[in-house]
Amino acid sequence: MNVESFFSHHGLEENPFGAEEARHDTVYSRLIESTTSHPDFAKILGQIDQPRTSVVFGEKGSGKTAIRLLIGKRVARHNQDHADRRTLLVAYDDLNPFLDRVMQRRRGEMGFHLTAKTSPDQMLESFRLEDHQDAVLSLAVTKVVDGFLGTSEGSGEAIPLPDGFAKKIKKLPRQARVDLAVLAMLYDQPRTGTYAQRWRALRAKLRMKRMFPVHLLRVFGTVSAVISAGLFISRLFMSDEPIWLVPAAGATLAVAVALWATWAWQHTKTWWLARRIHHELLAVERKTGELRAMLLELPKQDMLSQPWPIAMKGGGGSRSEAGNQDSRYQLTSRLLGVLGVVGYTGVMVLVDRVDEPTLVCGHAQRMRSVVWPMLDNKFLQQDGVGVKLLLPLELRHLLHKESADFFQEARLDKQNLVDRLTWSGATLYDLCTTRLRACRKENPDTAYLTDLFDQDVTREMLIDALEQMHQPRDAFKFLYTVIQEHCRMMTQDQAAYRIPRLTLESARRQQSQRVQELHRGLAPA
Image (cartoon, rainbow, N blue to C red; front, side, top):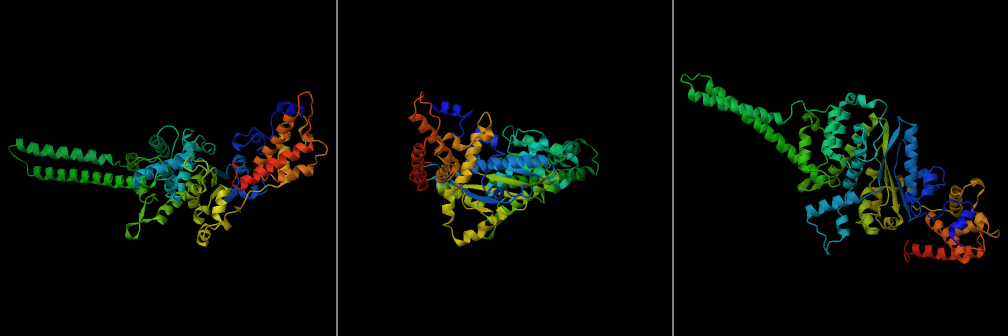
């Protein structure tokens, strides 16, 4: 008997237990708002308009990605209902482009080459907290710039602005306009087009024009030099030379030299600043020449008070990491100030799938190199910023091996820590029943998981079997295996559409053994 006939007999339009990845689960996408969630979900989510950090460890298939998707839905619904207390959601779940960019820059600057002697573990050890901060700021700022420009070319998702706000942009407080222009110059990372073109379009909307452009110094210097040359040349052809001619020519030449020198100094100083910024922004695609051109277009007085993300020099010429990080914290604070103008009270950062990047490939030590810089209390406890760290269980084992000094710095006791995502058999039973009803054509409320089994299979027996699966993905695999095994043992003309207890017990023993071997590292996921 085929599986489709079994599902059709029970009125099921599709397989309730066939999904293994929440992102591609059509059943979950329909149930995301109403399905049974993990008991710790409320703790993980917290208060949306006042986001706070949560650190969650869970096995593969325990529902971390499902929690991330559900958080996204809850935040979207909150933003729709509370236009004056929105929260900007930043999905930091695709680390591949940022890791690749940082490692490529590191190889170029530090002489790393992909040889047999240079492992990804060594390369990833250089990943810093500042790189994570830059990556998050890039994702957030790109959404904000999309919103102000009224496009979705950058991030694919522009933040919604208040009604009629487009006409009021030029009336924003000057500090907010300056901060947004600087943030866009540093962190806007569009998918299409160039960030320089988008920045100039944004600057025009913000009315952020320099009163005296630097290039005019060169123009006026050239004009002064031409006048001076003309005066000197006219002296050669005048029989009665006026007394003022030579001093005027000299003074004009001096003005030209002063203007050229000022222009050269401004360009050199700005080039040096652009070079230092480019050297520090490893996670964001920037070019020194374009940064210098944009810096020259900013009003001079506005550049003096900016917290540029540049390396600070400490004693002995070494870099001061605190200086690097403080500038990122100040830039984050200025981003929150810009968001506050348009009705946003905070930023929620969702960190997931840290085991999937190409350079990581599921290796626990590589994940540790990437994630550990973020386990910093100052970073995790920023006002108005909530970081949701959804981490693989392998990192939990490494975490418990850390020193007391590490825990003192991370202060995980303040981070809403969920030490392990665990599911009870009763919760898994409710979850599977909900999915069963979602796939049923008629009278879904009257459907129960026990309807698929013989009468001697009780609800308690199913709960006990699901308890041994520990998590949703393995529970779904178990139930689908039971159905497959039953259909395999039946011919089409037998038409037995209820699964006997013996088949359930056989599949339970098999799947329970697989789960145990998986937890001991003896079997693949």
